[in-house]
Length: 119
Image 1 (cartoon, one colour):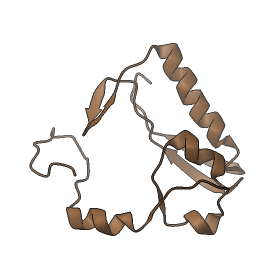
Image 2 (spheres, rainbow, N blue to C red):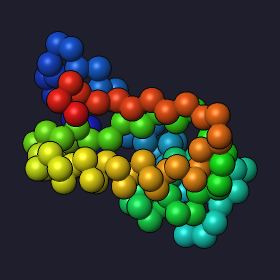
Image 3 (cartoon, rainbow, N blue to C red):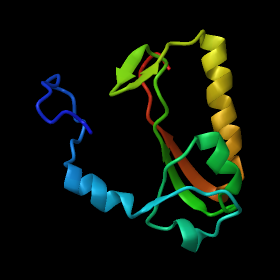
């Protein structure tokens, strides 16, 4: 659980949730291991490795994609550490994410990517 008493930077907009809220959200967690339908994943939280899940997402079902990948910075998020990669390696990794998602997008879909100035 996120430490509710942690002092955050002034501009930090991270949302903190309670144990009760976590338990409530867990009802919506799914782990997909087979081709899924839009109905099966609507209003669900897919909680698993991206590259394991993406291959089971429906084809051409996304109108608007907002993706917020880890910035290429060394930063610790709770217990997870993301280490800055060589720029070419990060670009290759990010390109593999986009290519993996391409088949899920409708022909007229829009994609927004959250990133920092460096990325």
